[in-house]
Image 1: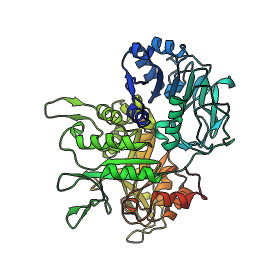
Image 2: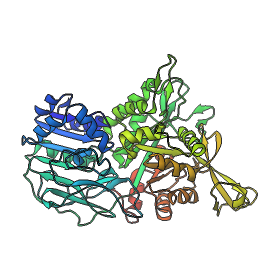
Image 3: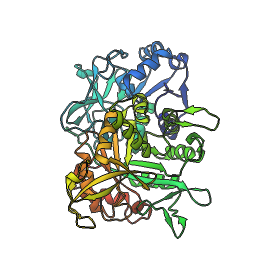
Length: 524
């Protein structure tokens, strides 16, 4: 029996699915006594340090958790579940940690680093351990965090990872083992690590041969645009400059769960499920999409992003739900990140009018509880050409792709409603404001390139990437393996996404990775 401590924030469903896939029975701790009586305890933490510690104290979990840690029984912490073991965090200096290990938690601080540290990175193991039995030493694991552990006691450091500089990525002390990365989202290597914790005696093992230095991998993301077809079935579709119909019918490129599973098996580093169906009622009543997410999380052990309908809503009975309520249901169903699209444009427009953060926008609410890494902003821009920069108040680029009248300058206009309506805000400004409001990642689409197979819009991507310090995902236009290499080389983005070429099997995820393996760092 494996007990999982669920304090109510984040995607615990994926940890449960991973443990159950290993053939184990899971009990979710709902009380202090459940913690004290656990045989083996896993503590997955997601979100912000201060919110986590407040909830643990409010639910009277701290004393039982301390008693369990001192009992000698196996404990495994994940992400914030590792950071909680230390004395305090710079993220919430007024909230004390458990303090069972010496040290504290510090924000990444190095110019030029994209924060959060997000993606697949390696580990350098520093002491013998049972956790990595059966692994070969060159595996990468999935990280997503803005803060890291600092300790002066090398005896507790199990592994380090490099991101600008070396930081502690795993700890081991007596019955306590914990990792900064997410094994439940790290594919086969992560499942092996969890199995080792569950099945092998602690403290038994060897010092595996691992790299002295590690590097963050570029991510290849498979995106599934999901909507109802004319028969009412949920299908994966693909647009041609956002038009998903062909001969009057919605393009049907497959079933969402089956395609997501296929991409996971082919080696996709992440999978995005974007619901492009217009909601007729409250999003939480969109049960088919919730079902798709739950089923996908049973088979796909890499990060899942869900988008569509993440907004405030008042139902027909007058009951008000916040974007946080909607996001919470998706997280509980297996999502790791929430994508906000058209609503982000309205949020930014309101901010630009007042120059004030209200704390009430979907971006601010979700990032405050679940952390900035949980909020992805999906931007849908199109080019607007001008003769000279002074012809528009928006940031412009001098383009190598002239406009219809030979214009040599353009700006990137944000759109809403599936690209049907342009707004007076540009992609660069929108990305910068969303970062300020708490977003942790930008998914940058391009209406002009969507479905063209002509390559990513390098000028657009470079302009946005240079304007923010959070990770950027390049999307729209990929037609061959070389387009992925080009966008990584010319823009420095952390990830590249594709849809149609994967759905139609014109190019596979594996083929892209095989092409890139000698050109950029990727996950094997």
